[in-house]
Image (cartoon, rainbow, N blue to C red; front, top):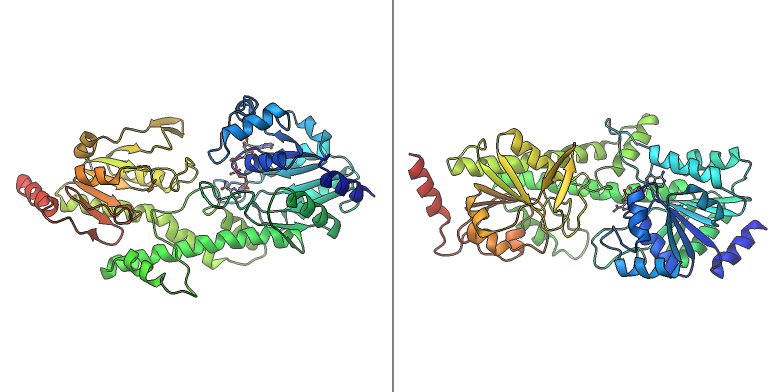
Amino acid sequence: MLKDVLLGRIRDRTAKVGVVGLGYVGLPLAVEFAKAGFHVVGYDVSERVVGALRAGRSHIRDVAAADVATLVRAGTLEATTDERRLAGVDAISIAVPTPLSKTRDPDMSYVLSAADAIKRNAHAGMLIVLESTTYPGTTREIMQPRMEEIGLTVGEDVFLAFSPERVDPGNPVYHTKNTPKVIGGITPACVELATVLYESSIEQVVPVSSPEAAEMVKLLENTFRAVNIGLVNEVAIICDRLGVDVFEVINAAATKPFGFMKFTPGPGIGGHCIPLDPHYLAWKMRTLNYKTRFIDLASEINSQMPDFVVSKVAKALNDDVKPVKGSHVLVIGIAYKKNIDDMRESPALDVMRLLEERGATVEYHDPFVPVYREDGHERRAVDLAPERLRRADAVVIVTDHDDIDYQMIVDNAALVVDARNAIPSKKCRPSRARVVTLTGEVPPAAGARGAVGRAELEAAAR
Ligand SMILES: NC(=O)c1ccc[n+]([C@@H]2O[C@H](COP(=O)([O-])OP(=O)(O)OC[C@H]3O[C@@H](n4cnc5c(N)ncnc54)[C@H](O)[C@@H]3O)[C@@H](O)[C@H]2O)c1
């Protein structure tokens, strides 16, 4: 039986494994398979990605260049832009992007093109696992028909499963190998083969009864995050109106040892997952005439947070008798979350755009993002120097990377709007700066300039 032959090859590591899409998800996975003893062929449409890997360089921060170089030199990890190389592999994992279209519907073009490339190169005795986050039904509706069109019966000739990726870029504890992996197959043989393949490289595998269940697991996980972040962001807005420090409330609530999970408010959500994935579910449910109210509400609140931050900046500048128009604003941290370089869907871009629309001059500092391009324009980070902080009318902390000297910021800036509660968390004591958080102000250190500085400004304006 084809299944038994493939099982044997996976177990004795003579199976060749293909990974389609070598980004944040695909590259760590390819490295784990190669480390487990498989010969891995990574296929990507990007010449840049493949060129870098062939030269032994890693374009993903969480994957050590030394690992890539060692595996590439040993010939166990290959990278190619030639889809025909897939014809020679026994198992394929697909990790291509699943973004949203301009109308916020699923953009399945990458999955479709990867599925077509696999269809052109598939053969009997192959295992294919889709990892890209997607709506329930994708594996059965997109992958299975393509196999049947070339005369391969799923469960007998080829084996098809869905296994959501859970990688959390920048997480120092959990990475591809020690994050449990859920797998749902079209048939029991499909799930068995996929389980044995992934058990070779991942510490814990969790089989479920169908690809739809596995697809839904990922959407539940990320909808759970989007909704809870939406809730806590609304709590921040509520606490602001009440004059209560939201972080004090959250930290005290988090001392409850059961029934509460801590989420923190911020400038909005970003990355390739939380802002997008719930919309895959919302879209699917619209086709079934059901409105996903929690998803819609969370999305509405989360996407308003950049406006909330900018309104804080405007109010704080106003207190200093300054309009936003003509003010010089320095944004600190523009990656979508701390300690990573990923700019996808970053709320910092909205914060900067909204400030510029109001007439501010905006610069940014981010040690992880020295340069980025948006709509054909290139922007470069500026250094974080005391004189620059002193020149700025407002410094806005959007992303709280650890590798930033926050004490230097409060020692030199006049006004800091801290959307992440970074200054209190890092135990900095405001000296020169007035520090405004999402729901209040950080008290200045004894003898600090703080309010005196504002009085001077007001006097100067009069
Ligand atoms: N980034 C994350 O933190 C994360 C976490 C969990 C799940 N996911 C999901 O994993 C999937 C991949 O995300 P990612 O962050 O790795 O994306 P990515 O953009 O980092 O990488 C995708 C790679 O696929 C390549 N590619 C695009 N079309 C291709 C094709 N037709 N054939 C071969 N290669 C192709 C691109 O060149 C790119 O290198 C998405 O569905 C995403 O939602 C991402």
